Length: 167
View 1 (cartoon, rainbow, N blue to C red):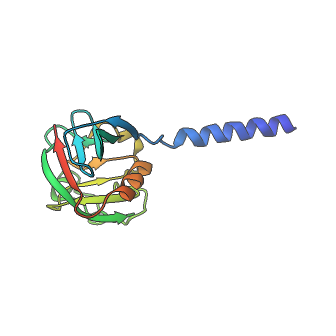
View 2: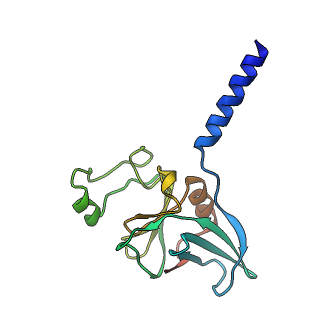
């Protein structure tokens, strides 16, 4: 009886662990940008938070699909936990049945646990409720992160943090 219970608990724990994405961040060597800058290299599908002294935290991200990628400089102009989402015009054009607002914290909300909005209002660095999309060319231009990673990044940055996106 105890063996059966122990086996059931082990299977349940393994099953739960398999559904949680691993945090994708790691410390790496990185030069050429000021400390505190976020650098997104879309071709690598990686986001770097520059720490200084030649180091950065590197995160796996999902980026814009073909025709939806962009490059340039911006800064964080908003920080929200469990944000509601209003699909931009190009998303609504492609998916006309989509609601005009999806409440924060709901399974259908693609923003996930948090969002860092970028100046200009069109794009954000955000979590996702579809962790399998992280690491791909998947979005309309936003940067997707695992929810654990966006929450980590959220704690490390502030309003005005510079963001550079390269291809």
